[in-house]
Length: 193
Image 1 (cartoon, one colour):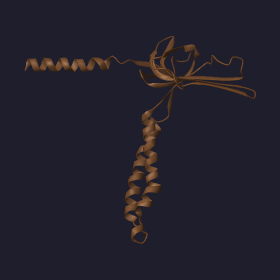
Image 2 (tube, one colour):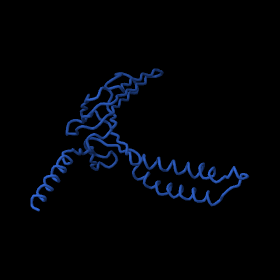
Image 3 (cartoon, rainbow, N blue to C red):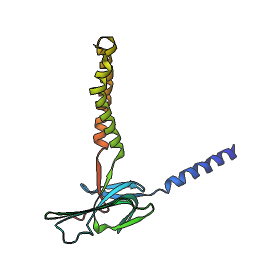
């Protein structure tokens, strides 16, 4: 019995320790400066002060990748893509690099970061459920209710069953899509007021 208990404790601690090694980095919400914990490996988009197209009227630059590290001076990501948009009177310059090699990292100083955007995949999933439910209620239910092989009769019970289930799924997904959907706009440190 003691040996079984000891073996179970060792197996449990071996399973817990790797899970505790994953870091969670603190960023801050742009709208209210509250801390927001984000796990390493999450896909983010950073809007940064442009380093390209000096002298142009409007300049925008963004980098995308997986978050690796946030500290008091910089944010490090595994670079996936980089985009620059420059506008000057009637001239436009666009620069995209989306074929970044795996393993390439990029460290951006905090002073260059304008915003960090993280989309919430759970909200996107509920938005997809809403779309499928609405499609089912509007298109599938009427088509499934028509008995074309029996003189084009309409079966109200079939229509009601399909439409009711679809609208219930739509109604249940709507508050979850609103609550979990959208994107979080973050900064590496709270703003000084």
